[in-house]
Amino acid sequence: MTSGKRVIAFAAVVVAVVALSVYLTFFQEGDAAEPVASRPSATVTAAGQAPASPLATATGEPFDIYSYLPVTKEQLAAAADLAERFTATYGTFRYDEDPAAYAARVKVFTTGGLGEVLTRSLTSAGTVERNRADQVVSTGTARLKEIREVGATSVVFVITGTQELTTKNGKDTVTADYAVTVTRVGSDWRVYDLQPAGEGQEGDPQG
Image (cartoon, rainbow, N blue to C red; front, side, top):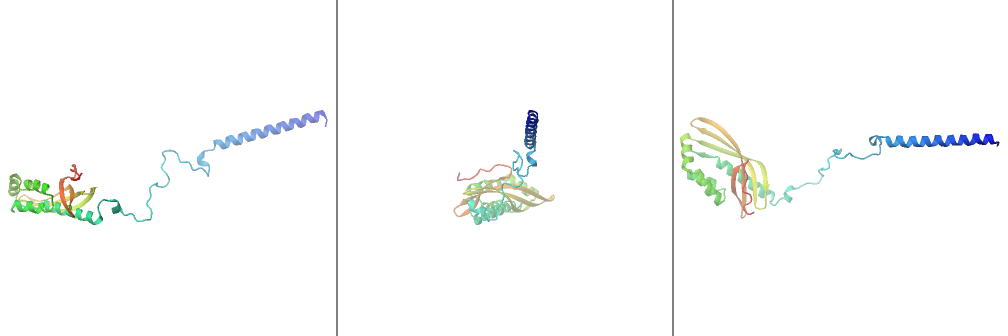
């Protein structure tokens, strides 16, 4: 090969190498610039973005909530029934009956302390005179609205009490929510506290 031909061949090799280098550089830069989302194999989720499916899901296995409570299903049902019957009894009275008899009906469901408080309130001269003056006849009903707190010795229920009232001025219906705390007394339950649902309870009497 002559000197001129060697120069031409060398130049051709140089051009080929440069062309290959440019091609590889362009290909790599283009691949790096490709958005992650366009790559089929990408599984990255942006920070703060909600996952496609819920993280907390229920399994097919039975979930017995009562096994995690300090009372059994039967005990909780009995306590709720007591709270409902107490609230219905509390809302049932007549202006022409003996106030002591009304208080005695209510006290059946309560602890001694609450029974004394309610007796003083229900038989007070102001309450009795007001009911007699208005000729109030009240029929109470109650239903469980929610369970607010479950403890080892007490349960706080929210009970909706409804009173169908008849007075000398006509008829009316009054509905209110009460927070009723039921406490364990031996193997039985008694109402320990009664408050409007929006106010706090005294809590577990054993705590």
